Length: 386
Ligand SMILES: *Cc1c(COP(=O)(O)O)cnc(C)c1O
Image (tube, rainbow, N blue to C red; front, side, top):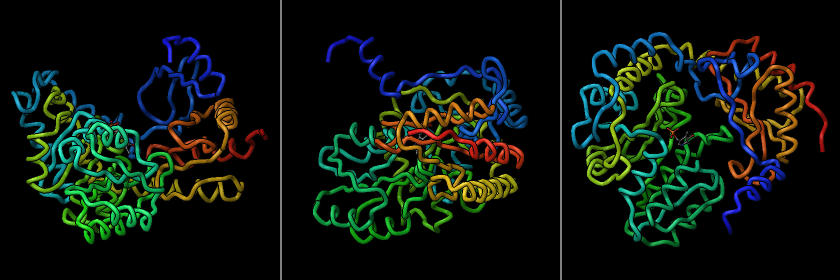
């Protein structure tokens, strides 16, 4: 491969795979201004509508009055403040686990965990549709990687039986980020316990949304720390803030503090952000109406699409994918919705497997019934394409 970047970009454009950013002129909320005018968006992960909540913003402002802006150092040197510490304790309480550790992003949390737990002698068993950050984390850990077909527990069982390694770690998205379905968490946990493997769940899309008080996918499935030793959750999705955490046993968290390179060799999050996240966490836990409204909108949307007979994947979560197949068809659908004043970007390979390009429609508690009806009306007139 040469450095002829123009040729590479042209090929990507020709394959309908070119990505472009849009510049937003207004905060995160369903009706959002991009360039010329407002679009009604169905593509944010701000599931509970907290990213632009006045109390969360006020928490950030109060936090910066008290703490300034930068943490100034990594957690292990002098960057770990009482704000971070309180947030970690509140996160551990929220997910019902002994301890939690903050990371700068979910990507870094996944990289940190796999690197700290595994070396060349370890084996990672990874669902084929896991998030890119888990794929990269597995590669960086230098462990052997075994991919199992999506949610195929029987296949995974055969792989596990054939591999004898001191540390075998099963990793899975709890809610799959592009499909919206849940991993078979109880079956995976039982298999892990039977075979002496460990299970790690990435609950980026379940934390805040599923389970009692939004405790997440594992709480919804009744799985504790013994059943699933490693839980990763993010703070930039349902909590509307930024960052991530890992929750588990005292020994797990101490091991991460000693060995997780993406924890050790990076600046701590701004403490004011930790204060804002504490406010968001309190709201997310207390205001169950946000989850109830979301569930209501999801039902309304699915009922409506069912009547239109469109190829919607089975999903009870806010992620509602409509499969177009080819990238060109996904782009045509997205363009049609935009002409109707709606923003639903096309998600294409390599983000999703070949032939499964889609509209990843995302509902949030900040949407109204009327918003969902507008979306359904636009979907009723999708263009016929090849
Ligand atoms: C978004 C996401 C991440 C990454 O989290 P960031 O905090 O945005 O880096 C990790 N895993 C899954 C499944 C995600 O959807």
